[in-house]
Image (tube, rainbow, N blue to C red; front, side, top):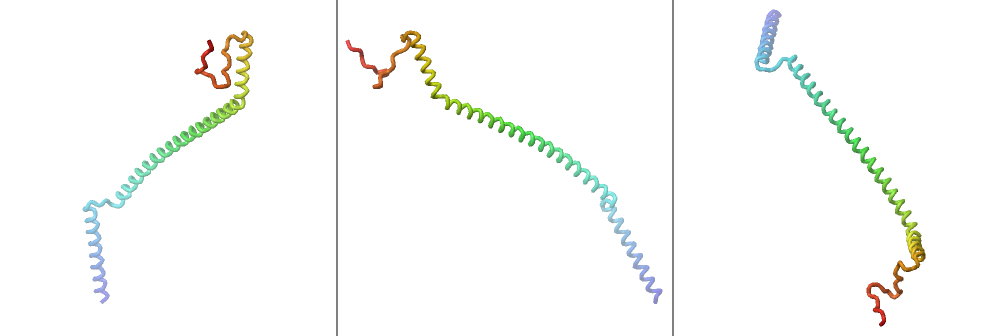
Length: 140
C-alpha cells in the first residue's frame, strides 16, 4: 500500500513538472519577456522618466529665476514711482505755499519797472465797473 502511494505521488509530481515545463515554454514562445528582460525594460523606463523630470526641474528653475527677476523689476519700478510721487508732492506743496507771494512780488516788480520808465510803458488799470473790450466811447 505504501508502494502504491509513492507511485501515485511520483506520477503526480512528474505530471506537475511536465505541466510547469510546458507552461514555461508556452510563456517564452508567446512573446512574453523573461523576468530579466522585464526588469531591464522597467529600468530603462525609469531612467527616461528621471531624465524628463530633470528637464522639467531645470525649466521650472529657469522660470522661477525669471519670475524673481520680474518681481525685482516691479519692486524697483514701484520704488521709483513712489520717489517721483514724493518729489511731485513736495514741489506742489512748495509751489502752493509760494504762489500768492510770488504773484504779488511779480506784480510789484512790474510796477517798479513802470515807475522807473516814467509810467508811460503800461496801460492804465481797468475801471472797477468792469471795463474791458466794450469801453465807453470818448466824449467829443
